[in-house]
Amino acid sequence: MNIIRDRAQHISEMNEVILSAKGHWGYSQEMMDVWLPDLIVDEVVLASRHFGVLETEGRIAGVFSISVDAEQRCELEDFWVLPELMGKGAGRIMFGFIQNWLQIQ
Image (cartoon, rainbow, N blue to C red; front, side):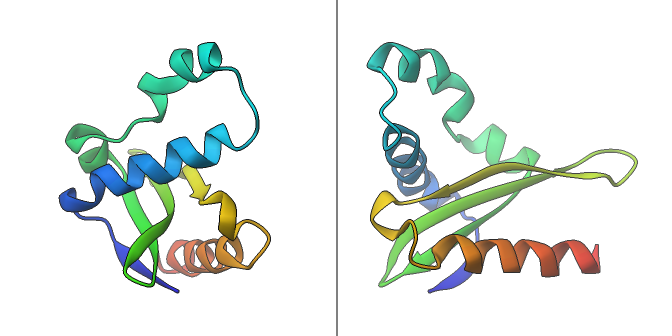
């Protein structure tokens, strides 16, 4: 597993991870539909934050994003892992990367 910088060609896979991870928690379809506009990544969202993806075996398995405001304050906006990788260290890898990234900002 490794972290790579987001690319526009990853948007579809990123959204699959996000929706799969959110859906894993058993929310109703009605709630998922309400949240959908805030969950989906498009090119505008991709350009507005610092995104990274966790790649494993040639596929996107995790997604995270960090926003940085005018005063250089950072906020973790997204943190999603495929359900089949939950509890297997994927989130730990992503969080470690984020911690290191924040230290050099």
